[in-house]
Amino acid sequence: MHEYSIACEIFEQVIATARAHGASEVKAVTLQMGRLTHTNPEQLKFCFDVLAEDSIAKRAEFLVEMIPPTVECECGYMGTVDTPGKPAGKSEEDRSEGGGKSGSENGDENKADAENETGLQQSELLEYVAALNCPACGRAARITGGQELIIKTIDIETEPEAEPEAETEVETKAETEQGNRA
Image 1 (tube, one colour):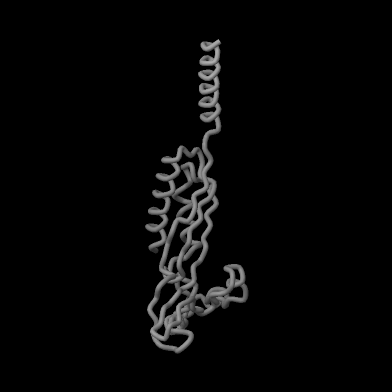
Image 2 (image 1 turned 30 degrees about the vertical axis):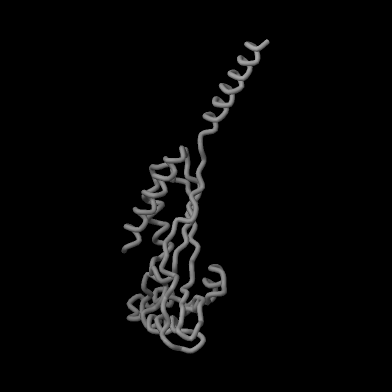
């Protein structure tokens, strides 16, 4: 399960960035994750939540925006490609509706064609690879996107009392200078 090591890296970056900006709490973390990373977003969230239990990120919302694969072909096509069960033009919520059931949901615990961590069944993997061909001409296309894993945003909260003290000192100094001039 490579999700744990990825979650560790994300957690370390989130905490380091939050501390560098004086955060008292991490409110939310948003990732952009390419479909071709073959990383399970639910497992990644679980691992992040476990790591964050005793930290300033313990109540952080963990959001993942999925990025569809993009390709470029010699015929001139550049754009997204559909992957099995994951049409490029639909939202994540739309994609999850009507999806196939895994072996355990069908009551077949030992099904040879069980789902892997990307949510695809093993028999769909060949179809998945074939889907990365150019949709315009059918030839093999060069993958240009969908392999990213980016921390898009980190929403933090800082201690509010630090700022008013600084404003009070500036106002007091300005009042003193005006009093000296009078």
